Length: 259
Ligand SMILES: Nc1ncnc2c1ncn2[C@@H]1O[C@H](COP(=O)(O)OP(=O)(O)OP(=O)(O)O)[C@@H](O)[C@H]1O
Image (cartoon, rainbow, N blue to C red; front, side):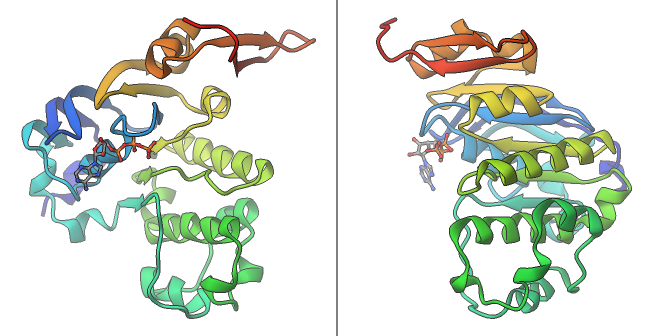
């Protein structure tokens, strides 16, 4: 039984490679951190998340969770502390959400904190296919968090989310990101992908910038989210705008400038 050894643990990756999808990534992800992985399409963000989830196994290098190779933790054991939202969620069962929730979590209870942020309860009687894209996304995020909620309340959860804020309107984007920030403050670890530079800058404690299947820049958000780093990663020019109170900076595209 290895699961107890993951509690209070970190991921460590040493020269981890996944075929041609992720090239020699080395990084350490500690408990309580909120990582956002950013980069162009095809940069390797989803593939890196699949490695961290244990669904994919490195072709080279060492990936440990709590000082033990991730592959030595059984997927069944991991499922009690680690959730993983795939980028494109599909369900073969077009049944009411409360039945789907029960299928995935063995319960139809939605913890108060999740309901406060994601407002799922009023949708539970509806089949998934009758919901909008954003409503479906809220349900999938909620059921992933419900799956490991008993670990989350103890600050022992590992929450992996591939583009969780896609399809969401700005209110729910901020709602889910502030919920994730809150669970990190409880000691849980979040690793997610995104394409929204400004929201990542606002909500991530740590950033990984990927390009051509390599993790090129990583570290504290303020240190990594620099215009020169972003220009290198995206082959695109950006400018920074400071609001009138000089409290918030926004990164915006500068399409007329070539680099
Ligand atoms: N199942 C797979 N088998 C082989 N190659 C794959 C597979 N999935 C992705 N790839 C390739 O691996 C590379 C990284 O893809 P990945 O999906 O990780 O990128 P991403 O950064 O998440 O992109 P996006 O922003 O478009 O979601 C791409 O070149 C892609 O074509």
